[in-house]
Every structure is written in C-alpha cells, then in structure tokens.
Image 1 (cartoon, helix red, strand yellow):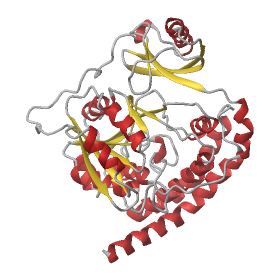
Image 2 (cartoon, helix red, strand yellow):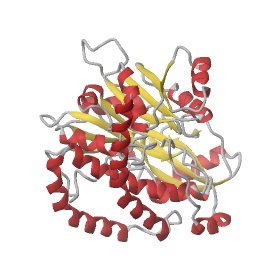
Image 3 (cartoon, one colour):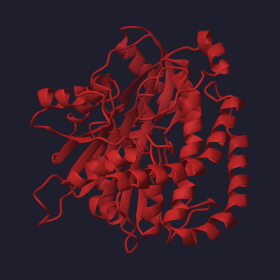
Image 4 (cartoon, one colour):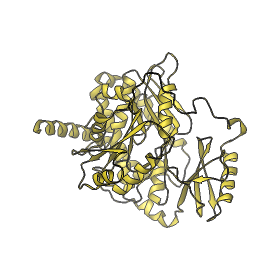
Length: 438
C-alpha cells in the first residue's frame, strides 16, 4: 500500500482503549515437508520467538492456511512441532495433500519467446528508502530465472531512493522517476519502461515470497480453461508480515488483503453467483499483488491517472483495471501460491484513515467504471439492491474477532464510499488541468 497523499485522521478511541490488552503476534512460516525449519516473511531463516506466534503453513511450498500457538524463546524444534500439530488438526494437512499438484514446477517457456525478461516487476515508492531496500532485497531472493525490477520514485521529496538504487543495486534494479503524485501515474510510468511479457506490481511496504514470480507466470500459462477466455490478469495471496500493534491487527481483521487459500478464476463468460459481479472488483485481488499481460494492460491504456492513492480519489486504480480486463473479455485468476507479505502501518492514526480510504477508493472505482464503460450503468443499477443485501448478509455472518473494526470505522468507510465519486470527479478535473498546463 503506497501512502502518497494519504490524509491524516484521528486515532480511534475504541482501538486505543484496547492497546494495553493487545498481545503482539510474531509471524513465521513453515513447510510440513521440511521438518524443523522456520522462516520469516520474505524467505529468511527464523528462530523461535516467544509469545503468540502466527504461522503460514505450507506443504511442498503450497500455502494451506494460518495457525497460531504460543511459543517459547529459542525452542525452534518445539515451536515447529506445536505448529505442525495445529496444522494437522485445523487444516486437514493429510497425506493426500503431500504430493505436489499439477503445474507446481517452474514455468515452461514456449519456443521462440523473446529473449528479454519474462516478468517486469514494478515497485512504486514514495519517501521510504528503508522499506524500499527491504522490499528489493526480498525480490532479489526470487527463484525466478528471468525478471527485471523497475523502481518508480513517485513525487519524492529528495533523492534518497535514487541514491539507494544506484549505490546498492546498480546492475539489478532500474530507477525511474514520476514527478506527479499518484500511484496510477507511477504504475503507468513503470509500464512504459517494462520489457517483460508480464508486468507484476507491488509496493515498497511488501516482502515478496521467493516463489512469487514463478507462481504468477505459471498462472498465466495454465490458468485459463481450455477454449475459454485467455488470462489477462493474475492476483495472489497477501498476508501480514507483522502483527505487532493493535493498529496492524485491526487493519488485518477487517481490512486485510487476504483472499483465501483456494485458487479461483473469473470471467464475464462465466459470471459467479455474486449479484454485483463484475463491480465487486475488490474480491479479485489487491494492487500490492497483481500482474497483467503487458500487451493487455497497454491495450487498455494502462491505469486511469485520476484514480489511486495520491489523488483526491484515494484509490480504485487496481479495481478499475480488474474491471476493464473482464470487460475486454479476458479472465482473472487468483493463485494463493503467488504470495506477498504486507507490512501494515503500525500507528493507530492509520486505521480510520484506511477505513475512509477503502470506501473512497471503491466509490471512485464505481464512478470510473461508469465513465470508462457508460453502457454498464444500467447493469450496476439493476444489481445494486441485491448486492447490498448480499453484502449485509455476509457482514452479519462474519464471526466476531478481536480484530473487528468498531462501528465507528464502518461509518467512516461508508462516508468514504459516498465521497468516492466526488473525489474521482475532482481528480479528473485536476488531471485535465495539469495536462492543459503542460
């Protein structure tokens, strides 16, 4: 999540009151096929932390789910056994799941494919050189054999990111600058320089799993149904890299990015039961972990510069891109093997700001979708009542958890939703004015 232009908001008293009661969670991962080994988000070896431990459980690399147990400092073997036992109880990690599934190996390249990089990774950054370095170090641990990294420095206040890239990654990372603020503009700047047949996007506050790029490319190659729409976009699993503060827990509990551990796909030719499809684009994935066929994204004109963090619209750039991919007749697939770890903001002020931003981004997306596809308006109006009832039923059925946002934040999200179309129109005006000036 890029924070360009994010407005400050007052901390939520409900969360502040729970601050002293919150127990931090240490995040690790383990593979049931690799006994005794624990790793930190991003792939580095990890020891055994004390206190509450939240673990991603894998089997031959494939994510199965999350489990939590108490840990004792330094007892790596004991912690691994406790986590493995919890996985077998809670995740049905049986022998039937121990064989790697089809398509689990490295991507198979078609004969005659370009000798350039298969994947271009575009990382938007804004005044966070420490996080950017950690993000790049994780990306450079990738198991993929053919990729490039492009850092897009969006409206920087200084040259810290440029100095970092040129000093520490001179031959491995390309640096470009986008002087106008806005995440969509930054992504479009990266898209113009990309040389891969696939463009993968993530942010500077993420840590990529070593198998992320390989899983994305596999999904493009084998994700479409035979004879069905070709895959135009792939999204993946996003998990919290840390849950050390009440704010991080709250963000994950209600506004987390995870879309589950089961592969899925969507196309307009085979619409799902969701009554608001394809306007529920947030179900398809999130901008911190998305990839497109480069020719498809360029054919759509890239991202709408009037959407995204850093504009009055607050967001919606990723949702609009998903919507337009479907509207163009392509398929979107979601693969949990394509894993990104996200470092949620730690301060309580981030929570209400994020609540408002989620609503505003979705409202801006709906306005932008109608602007780009006016013929879709009647379908949206027909589906809106059923979609509201569907969303309300899902909210009522959601189990109560310590991470649930209080009602006050739900109201902030609703306020954001109502503001979103106005923010988008303001952003369209600003974009047109800046073009006329230049």
